[in-house]
Image (tube, rainbow, N blue to C red; front, side, top):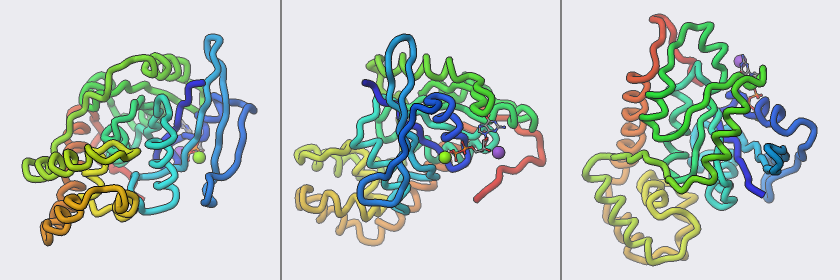
Length: 268
Ligand code: GDP
Ligand code: K
Ligand code: MG
């Protein structure tokens, strides 16, 4: 049975979508080893059954909280066939931070651009085609609370499962960091790791302790030497990686979203 994972910022409408899809056909438990709630359900579409997992709401996929670790471990190790990234259309810029990380993981992502009713009410104009082009993933407008757009969302997501095409997004952190990523990646290539090597390389340069611990016993010594040899540059790279993601998002939003002046995204 194919599995669809729902990922998104808190309050983007994930659970509303999950409930709309699965109805009463759901099970709530706990993720192993942590107190984070695990919601799973099933639905039928055109004669086939699909499994849906509602992952904890997160703003990022670092190792900052149990929620983030549960979400990212599931995406990387649970091998969902497709990830539906629920994005709040009234807060696109903030929500896309998570999106860029999902796409970078090399997983198949479909964006449910939710809260389109509120976006309309706020006169936020979104060029869906442009947004989809820039991100390299399908973008489907939805109003989960009113069951709007869900058929198309499911249709597109299921179709995407069966396509071979990987994410088209190519992301540059600038020459120096890209080179460092490539070097680390090529060293990692020889070790058997359950995560994509390029993603690990980025995480290591971001100073992600969880990933460092995870690969500590498996990664070859040159990686450790390489990271240590970065010295002060390590901090510089960490900041630069986050900056570059925001730059990238800013450019996309500039091209595809028009907001009436005076509207500022809520930050939490
Ligand atoms: P989650 O934190 O991502 O699971 O978000 P929820 O599903 O709990 O939704 C947060 C709130 O937004 C709830 O009050 C929902 O009823 C509401 N909501 C969900 N989808 C929509 C939508 O498309 N439009 C509007 N206006 N409200 C929505
Ligand atoms: K709301
Ligand atoms: Mg929820």
